[in-house]
Image 1 (tube, one colour):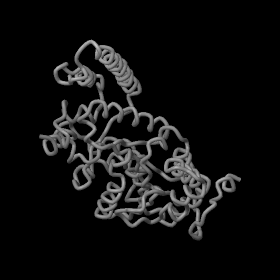
Image 2 (cartoon, one colour; image 1 turned 120 degrees about the vertical axis):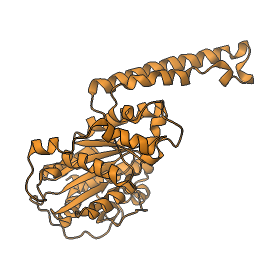
Image 3 (cartoon, helix red, strand yellow; image 1 turned 90 degrees about the vertical axis):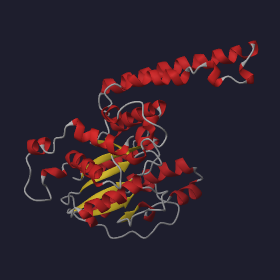
Image 4 (cartoon, one colour; image 1 turned 135 degrees about the vertical axis):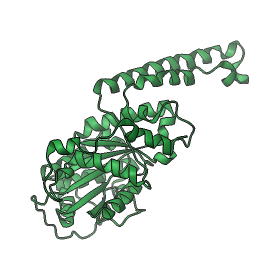
Length: 341
């Protein structure tokens, strides 16, 4: 019945024969993140890394607006539905058409299940999703699709990418923390958060704290003095012809009032993130094999791949949990030396 509700009023590619075998469990990553965070580039880099490690890997494009892919997809949602077709047929804007396409995928989940079945139980799958944040923080459609796959026995881990250069701006980093927390709460599945493009972390200037402050997120309230300094700059630094005289006094008072409210909101966000205690980040540069290996170890623990279901003898839970332990100097210190001045 749901499929009839979302029946496509535009031409779609002929359906391929589907073979849905629930016993063919697939391990994989669900790659999400804001636009420009490097999701497709990460998928291609991870594909190359996994194939070099001897794994069979397939990449599935689930972004109906992405027609410039750096990889050859094993399946492409544009074979099922496209943003352009939905927008022209239903009179929708870009965001509305994207939501429609994901809801159409939810109503036709057998198409995606068929793509995973064709990949086979021995294949490791990367799902490349759209970058619109509201799909993961407001709408239930992505959560419904992923939970549908998990109910069919697939073992997936969400990989949330965030551009590392946001660390250089306290306001942006607080926004990143809030979006990341919202995504983790909304999707309700294992999630590994990664600061992407680590090689560009200081592209917009040096960071006020060491890298471990941004990866561990133990005391985000330490960013508040930097926000306050940006909100209340010295008068000479911002004064112009329009800011002098008694006529400009109401405008200055208005700006000061906004800055005070903004600082109070930022303090509440910091408290919220600390209270949940869920947000933390790894760091990755796609061209760097060391950071890719470290990220993959975390992801394999999150989706269960490291427990030996498909490779070699099954590994013990505690053995996997204790394996590859690293000191902070190894985990973050070496990255700071290599990628930060």
